[in-house]
Image 1: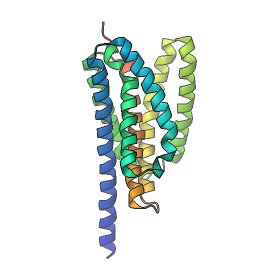
Image 2 (image 1 turned 30 degrees about the vertical axis):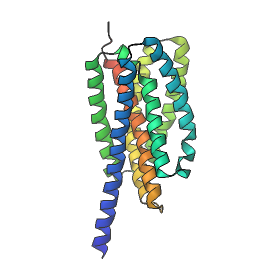
Image 3 (image 1 turned 120 degrees about the vertical axis):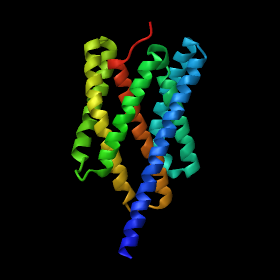
Length: 224
């Protein structure tokens, strides 16, 4: 009986994480498709407008994330879809700035980092709470420094931001995955777990995209 319970639990969390990673893959495909669609229009002015629209809509959707657990699963998936479309609109300029080869290299490298740190976060017995909290504090500092650099326009500061970000976001991936694992074992119903698999995947997608962008900033080849 005990063995059956263990097998059932292992199967349940395997399906849970399989759902999370499927959502991550789907979200990245939505972001990429949106970027390609905007780029296919070959209209830089429209691309800038789409970027502004993506920025405002992603901020609004991020603020609204707290109420998503009051929605049903289908509505949460709609939220997930529109959030990733917003991210695609926000990031569409990379198709105009960087070569396709650079983008694919960054995409591949970010995917390896995502897989590696997700695996670590899911399987490590080390509590990543303190490291995760420290990374969040550093992230806040990096965001503040980024706003300051909008005024300064320093390439040296931008390079430092990219380097530090490449250290922070992999840690946040492992931290988020470990938290998602802990939440699975919390006393919550199956519908809430399904919603967690959707909302939790958004955090991983955001970290993945940030890693990809920072890799492009450091190693990307710009179009001439």
